[in-house]
Amino acid sequence: MKAKSTAVIVLLLVVAGGVVSFFTIHHPDSSSIPSSSSSSSTSREASSTRGEAITSSSPTPSDSVSEILLYNSGGTFTVLGHHQSDSAYSMAEAYTPDASLMVSPFVWNMKVADGYVNMTYDGPTLNVDINMTHFQKITPSIGVNGYPGVMYGQECWFPFAGRTVESPLLELPAPVESLPYTDSCLSYSLWLDKGSIDDFSYDIWMSQDPNTTYLKFPDVEIMIWLYHQEEITSKYFVNEGTFTVPGVVNGTPENMTFSVYVLPHTGSGDGWIGVYYVSQQEMEGKVTVPLTTMVQGSFPFMEKIFKNMNESTYYLDAVQVGMEFNNDSAGTALMGYSLYNWTIQVG
Image 1: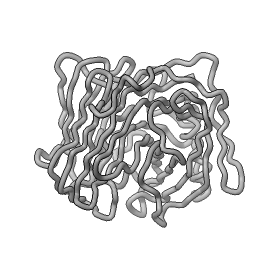
Image 2: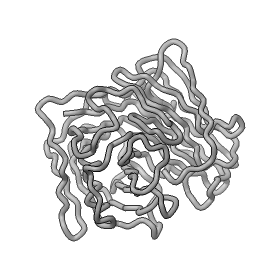
Image 3: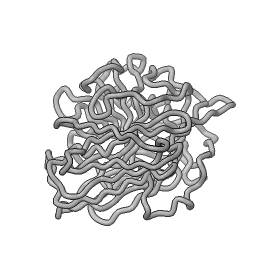
């Protein structure tokens, strides 16, 4: 996500009859998505290339693996974001079998628009339906309208400014250097009519002070683009090579290769550092990535620009999942996604 401005209006939605956990849209049939359990890859070594190999310092998985289930426990509720009601930053909390998630449409670059972002938990599925016209951006030079999604962990800054209920298997904030081995598995589908899907991604936050209320250098944002239509072309992003990790895509173990870009400062001269893992394939369905490996593996790339980066001084604060989207030339954005399941395997 890019630099954010404007005032925040937070609406806490109280859900009758049971609280929630994942978004679904009516377009794809969720019955075609596999169940929540996922295979583990047999190889856990990650490699990167830019003239030399960078060795991951991630811990290896233990013999026993436990899962954190991050999908709605029951009930149905909707969070709406639209200009007329000044609800671009509406927020709710969805309760899952093992924790909770913060939910927000987070249309942070909307100056004015007709229509809405509708985020509905229907049982365990989160359906995100974007239907907006005449979209005008706060910052027209930025090709992103917003990032509707969910958050696990703690963010003391805008827009969530809070902490979710957490599993004892992964309590955040946590020191980066002592993170347990984790795999993160998403089951999702995407649909597009008008506009563009910039990326369907993880948005991961690290800080040296987990209680900070204002992000700045040397805080870190890591984005993992599993699917993207946007290409990174800005001269401000430094291409630092590639990073290959073992993963599982729709039941098949495979090596995933990501192009890696570092944005030294996001938004301003004292802005936070951005690390972008951009998939070299467009992944959709059920996708497992080695989360700890990619978080810890970001430091060698940042050290190519900032020589004094040290993971021992950082905390992993929060992990978000969502979709950055953009309107077409007529100002229309008609698209969405369904998130059927999110599990984090710890072992």
